[in-house]
Image 1 (cartoon, rainbow, N blue to C red):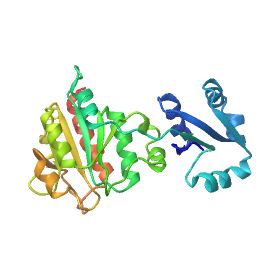
Image 2 (image 1 turned 90 degrees about the vertical axis):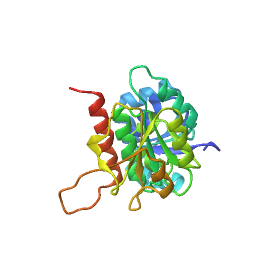
Image 3 (image 1 turned 60 degrees about the vertical axis):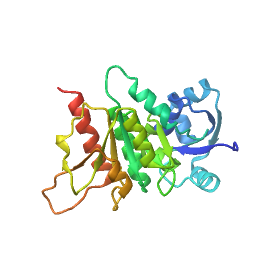
Length: 253
């Protein structure tokens, strides 16, 4: 295994890695998948990737003991170059230089659940978000679990990891973005936000919401109205609703 590498698994996840610019060092494929998926085998041969075929009965144990893979690997595990975070300045430059649409960046304030991050990456890719900004400390980062849960979206959505979210939000403001936070108090209905503005949408952590300094840095705060008995939504669900509200406003039928 290469010294600077990480492991990804699952057909969609590995497929998207093939389609991206990420370097793939080697793959491990079960005999069943190797004999069944001619397209996948053809891609491996075309890219001249070192391939190990392992008997079906031994595959689970091998990838678990060797690489710690315990999830639904679907018969394929790949050793790849580590995911590279995008510098925030580069993300802002790309987002604000588009001619056809305003910038749209999603900021995650202390999200800890890899399931939420994976789901948000999928939604961000589907809706054309320019990038996601996460905290370096006390928050979930990009991992093999997140890669699997994102079903390959991790290869296509730029992610910046920053030390100080408040400083990052101020940089976004300087670049012309309006910062919209999600909060239950002192907020307006999410449908009142002008989605055609250049936006940075802040999603708070599970249970705690936005931190005080991040909340104070927001230009607007919005909430999702609820008529039932629950008082909050899962972070990835809330993010999906808000992201698609912006998408809907920018892409009228």
